[in-house]
Amino acid sequence: MKGRVWKLSDNIDTDVIIPYKYKARSIDPKELAEHCLEGIDPEFSRKVQKGDLIVAGRNFGCGSSRDQAPIAIKASGISAVIAESFARIFYRNAINIGLPAIVCKGISKETNEGDIIEIDLGEGTVKNIMTGKSLKADKHPEFLEKMLEAGGLVEYYKKFGKFPWE
Amino acid sequence: MQRTSLIDKELQDKVLSDQGLTFSEKILSLKRSDEPGKIALASEIMVAKVDLAMAHDGTAPLAIKVLGELGIKRVWDSSKVILHIDHTYPASSEHIANFHSIMRKFAKDQGCYIQEGNICHQYMLEHFVVPGMLVIGADSHTTTQGSLGAFATGVGSTEIAAVWASGKIWLKVPDSVKVVFDGRLPLGVYAKDLILFTIGKISSEGANYKAIEFTGSTVKDLSIDSRATLCNMSIEAGAKTGIVEADSVTKEYLTSLGREVLVDVHGGKEAIYDKVVEEDVEHMEPYVALPHSVDNVKAVREVEGIPIDQAFLGSCTNARLEDFLIAMKMLKGRKIKKGVRFIVTPASKSVYEEVLKKGIMDVLLEAGALITAPTCGACVGTHCGVLGAGEVCISSSNRNFIGRMGSSESKVYLASPATVVASAIEGVIADPRDYLR
Ligand code: SF4
Image 1 (tube, each protein chain N blue to C red):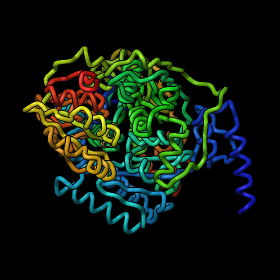
Image 2: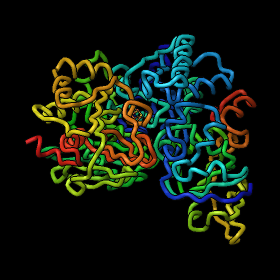
Image 3: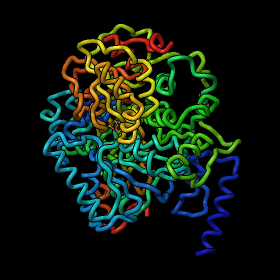
């Protein structure tokens, strides 16, 4: 997986990712994507391109437990979020809906907006193509990795007729 | 059948008496379903049986859709699935009304419990939760239920759908942080101030993935209303759950509502904690979290005088009877500052009823408050007090992120009900102590 980086700071909360007023109105991913990260950059949904990545600081996705947050990010075209750390509900939600949430210590310092980053989930590495610097990423537990491979919880269940932890 | 319950009893006694296990390790050991009988130790990933699985109008519609996509026709146990229509109630738009209809239909088809017009967490405290339960909710503030000695944590819609389907959830057994509050609360200092102070100190990620156990002489003296405030805001430090072990206060509360302890779980004396935070509350004072982060905490006296447009007394954090008694005391014979909207939203119908019965309503109305039906409303910027650009609100709720209560150009200060009321009276952020002497 390779993509262009959108750089975000620490403590990006789910109210900023998708405000409740939009979440209350719709569960349609496309509609949610139009308002993704509006609080930080009202133009984000127009500028983001398919395959782009988000690199963030600590505690990404803190706050309200809304699946709509990773759904909006995924539907906007982002293919993975790499962060120093994630808030726990966001981390679970992201993987459940099939958006890779990758913990990579030090990534924030090593990346600038617009850099190209290559992720190798199998190897557990994140490489900045611009600087050549490679960092170790945390591996997901095996059952979550399988869920991500399948494209999320629903897809996994449809394929195997059981949940990945069963 | 009898044989199983005997083994369960044996396991239960063994787990409950183990002095090396934390509260969370004990509850999760008892709920374990992947390897029944194996002790669940911190950091281990395990699968547990869920006692209650709730969702509300912000999360249930999507969960219902996901359950359909999974092709699952019936929830695992309809008596354990609880739906709440609370976030935007009554509906403020056609879109939302349609979501509510989806929920009502689902509840009817499945035969599961649905309630309307009480904030979910308050309703769960009043009606369902007992110590020893594992409660999963599609809402981050599900941690509130820890105030009754349950292990309660939040998930998203997809995950709650999986729980509805299977009755189970995977969890990483959390490390535990002990927060010890000792001493008598000074005048004007409440559970809200304790938790704001603590989050300010350990930061909004200071307890990420961990269980916070609140204990100490101060906590022992706190009512369930106040304990609920502590556990409610544990998530604001990133915690998986917040817990106050059941004691005589818990038992009294439950008895008054016709319930009793399921399993009396207490953390072992030799259990290992990741961190112990000890606070002498006698030095504390009223605090406020400044925009736009819950850990941006200062003493009220440091920010006194900031003009406000709205004061909000509501939400699952602080809109219970105890909070209204404080408001009544402060507002008797006083008026809200002209030009300030003082919006009051009781957490549940039963709180509303008590507020009426005790004559609190009269005092609030006379002072100039606007009282709404119980709902989340202003707390989450959906209706009943949405902020416009440039507006400033002081709120008894739990989050002040950008855009949380409306415009991304509005500002939210978080404080105790007492500080909210004092500020409503003065029209600026104000110290409540002057009104409590
Ligand atoms: S009152 Fe606010 S914090 Fe509590 S459940 Fe409702 S929206 Fe969430």
